[in-house]
Amino acid sequence: MPIFQGPIATAMGGVDPSWLAGTATSAAVYSALGYTRFRSRTEHDVPLMVAASAPSVPTASPAQSAS
Image (cartoon, rainbow, N blue to C red; front, side):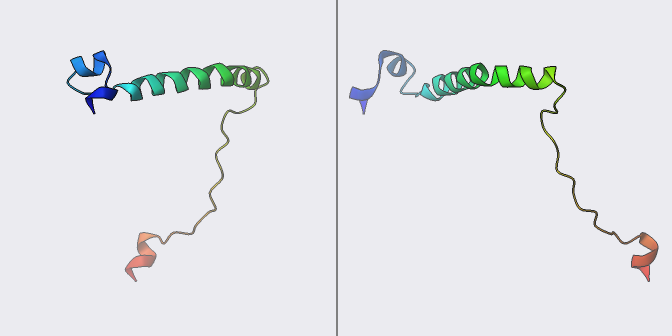
């Protein structure tokens, strides 16, 4: 609806660039709130992400699968 479009969206042919503003805002807030936790973890040598160990699954060797 043209009544809800601002001058920039109208000049761009009706394109809605609000997702860019939302992405930039959420990235800035996430970075600002998470930086202190990230810094404290790296100073104390705590791993940032610990990968879960996958259970070992026996696999058939080519010699076993041929028989």
